[in-house]
Figure (cartoon, rainbow, N blue to C red):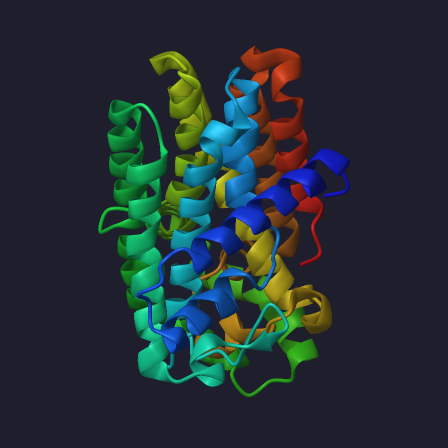
Length: 321
């Protein structure tokens, strides 16, 4: 993302996140350190950027959208902390540094995630105006992050991992290169089960797509967008969310660990149900491109105002980390 406006917005987001980390004098120091360690570690800031750019595209003021932008990044960061835990993905690296539970301890990491999740709703409730918009944003983000959204998607993902391990065990003892070469052969095991792709997309519409869609609708709500525009933004977010997950699955196979700042080739090792595992590499790339094209069609009525959203959708395909 080389648009200088994106860089400017990212800096504004980082500054405001740092401000929120200093705000509560009663927060225990170790908890604050753990929260800040993950929240201020950098990253693409894709979700808060979407909030700001959507608000701007709909004629709103990005300053009014900044609390919601920070809130969604807090929710995203909480989810990463918890995803990395030994009981989930058991990862050692995140954004090029030890994961939160490695840097601190497992209990502190769980509590840091809990604190970021609850702080997100406090920030929206206290700093978003008017009150009815703040309430709508809280409900929107809670639905996207909760049992029917991201958390529900994670549960379904874990269930699918257990269910499909036996189908992918053939790659378990292979080298990384052999696993990558063998990815296309995995799709043959599922070629007679079209419902499996539907199942995978249902998982990721909740696990990844709902939060991305919420970034769009938060920005639109704060800008005062009408119901038709909010629906179009939601559909843009759904398509970008799925494309983002496909890109993640592809990067897990071909990505560079140094660039990504986290371990790669983990999904095959865990027997996870992935897009390359179902469709193969080429069809996965084609599916991602089709989703991005669909996303851009949804926001075409915004005209020139939606150009940055269009460019950000294209970035999802082009990113290397």
